[in-house]
Amino acid sequence: MATSSDRSESSDEEMIGSGRTWILNAEVESVREEDAEREEEDDDDMDEDEAPNNQTSNAGVHEGNSSTSASREGSNIVITLTDPGLLDCPICFEPLTVPVFQCDQNGHIACSLCCTKINNKCPSCSGPIRSNRCRAIEKVLESSRTPCQNIKYGCNTPVTYNKKNEHEKACVFSPCACPYVGCNFVSSTNELYRHFSNGHLDSATGFLYDNVELDFSFPVTLNKSDSFLVVREKHRGTLFILHNSIEVLGNVVTVSCIKPSCLMEDFNYYLSVTNKESSLTFWSVTKSTPSLQVNGSPSRSFLLIPCEFFNSCGQVKIDVSIYKGV
Ligand SMILES: [Zn+2]
Ligand SMILES: [Zn+2]
Ligand SMILES: [Zn+2]
Ligand SMILES: [Zn+2]
Image (tube, rainbow, N blue to C red; front, side, top):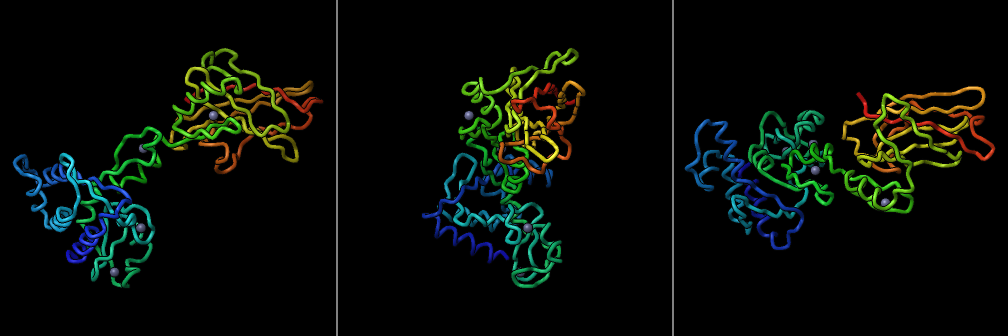
């Protein structure tokens, strides 16, 4: 196993001149701290070369690193991996997560989820994958640092490679798209709200969350053929979309908030329409939508506005209330 690990490290070394896929920051300090916790001993006196020698599984990896042209930045070793899939599970192609298992005979690795799916039989050599963990790869994963994919939208949180997916699914900097027709601006919600306030303020109906005890609804005029209207909370600039679609019995209307789905903050909303004979009131909770195009699964609850509520010009006045959920 060590031989196979060493071989792959040295092949990286040979290719490193042309390597440019992504960079692994092997934080020696973090490995040392972890070792210290586990072994309950003070390693203040150790230098970087001594630390890995405490664990034989580390030794191969560190020898491999030190024999490459990897550069040292402070306590970090910056390594370029020429194979971008090296730290991904060869079965599901997702970043490997700890624990990493390997087949008994040839050391082929697989993530723990895949081991179960493949009935603990190695897809490469058909050998058994039992409880052999690949500690060396686990160490590399845990000590790696890679930027979040939303770094260009302001996320400066370096993540370990095995936590990359987990972080990015919940990253508050996940991009959202400007709902203004023809505008291609995409950024984190804060930047998007600022952009919209600076560039398209007049295109949205403004409202405040305040006055919640009072009659805090505000009117919007919806054309039968509008596909959406943008509504903007004035203090924070939070953007909401009133979606509208024409169905057989009338128009279907829902409200969503432009923000990444991972942000848990939801809003309640009321919609109310009235004609001479009757009124309809609808309450629900906003869904999150990062862009107008990505609505996810269609809402199962909605306000159905019958055709009779639209005036002769094809318009209806909707009283809207939006407030933070409790
Ligand atoms: Zn997998
Ligand atoms: Zn195998
Ligand atoms: Zn992030
Ligand atoms: Zn825009």
